[in-house]
Length: 106
Figure 1 (tube, rainbow, N blue to C red):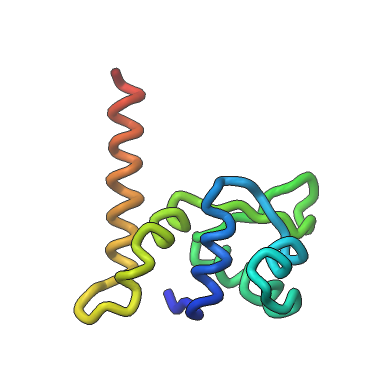
Figure 2 (cartoon, rainbow, N blue to C red):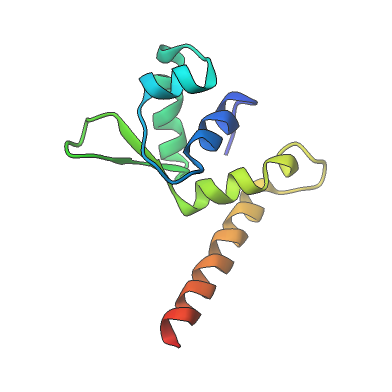
């Protein structure tokens, strides 16, 4: 995945509280142009970091995924030499899913 720094991480960070949001609110919250935010949200959704939610398919509402939460958690490693960020994020998601399955079995 190819993320735009710092904007994509700022967008993901704004979602980290688990609430859904739209481009207009995000633009205000992170002080970026709304039209630019509108171009980044579908890209982040294509990467599996956000998902479209809401009462209508094209409502413009998004929410962060587990993969997006993992990306926020590992933001500092994104540009670090020798780090495969995609693998790191996917590993975090796999570990979290395993823990959740383990808890459900108990």
